[in-house]
Image 1: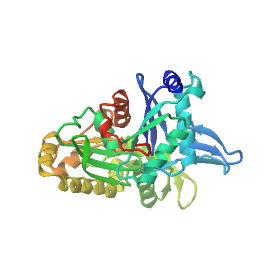
Image 2 (image 1 turned 120 degrees about the horizontal axis):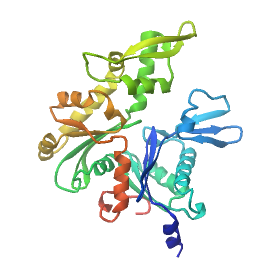
Image 3 (image 1 turned 180 degrees about the vertical axis):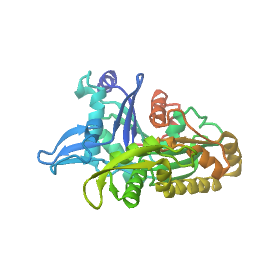
Length: 346
C-alpha cells in the first residue's frame, strides 16, 4: 500500500553526483537541475545558507563563520552530512509541488570506477538518508556510453574517456561490462590549481579558483595555435599586495596544464595496451570518445589522436552524458539491470 503511495507522489531520478556539478534527470521530464556541488554553511547556527549556484558565488568571499564546502573530492564523498543535505535539497526541489513527506523516489546514481565498498556505501546511504526509496548505482563511463547511445550490450569495443571535475576515468566496454579501465585523481579542479600556481610563479600574481576556472574555459588549449587566445586577468600582486591586471594567453595555459594532460594521455595508452587485441581493432575503427568538462579543452581530441593513432572525438553535450545515461537506465531498469553495480541490498 505505502509503496503504491510513494510511486504516485514521487519522481524517479537519475543523478550525476560530480565533484564540480550535480545534475538531476527526472523520469519523463529530462534534466531539470544542473548546479555546482557546493554548499554554504553558517557555523554559528550550523544551518545551510545556500546550495549550488548561490553557494558558488560565495567562494573566496565569506567571513570566518561561513564555510563554503565542496563535499565531494575526486568523485568521492568527503563530507557525508553535507552531501546528504545537498542531495535532500535537490530532491526536495524536484518534489516541491508534491507532498514532501511522501516523496520517496527511486534513484540511479553514477559512481567513479575503482571506488571501495565503503565509498560505494557512503553514496548509497547519503541518497537513502536524503529521501530516496531505492538506490541503484552505475559506473560513470558506462552511464556516459549509454547516454551517447553506444551499443554497450553488444560484442563490440567502446572506449570512453570521462574527464570530470575530480577524476579522469578511462574505460573499454563490451557486452555490458568494463573490460579494461584506469581511474586517475585528475580533473578540472587540478587544472585550476595548476593554472593558479603557474600564474603565481610566472607573473607574481595571486588569482582565485573562480578566476582560474574562467581562464580555463575562455582560453584553455592543449595544442599550438597560430592565432592564440588572450585575456586580461585581475589578481593581487605577490610583492606589493595590491591589485594588478595581467594579460595571459592560451600558450601559457597549455604550459600550465602540460603535466596532467600528459598523464591522461599516457594512461589512455596504458589502457589500450591492456585491452584484448580483438577489441583494440574495433576501438581503432570506432574511435575514442571523450566526455566530461575536460573534453572541451581546445585541441584535446587532435592531441589524443596524434599520440595514440586512434580517431578521437567529443560526445555530443559531454557535460550531461552521464546523467542522460542514468535517465535512460531509469526508463528501462529491468532491461539494463545487468550493467548496474551491486549495492548493499543486493
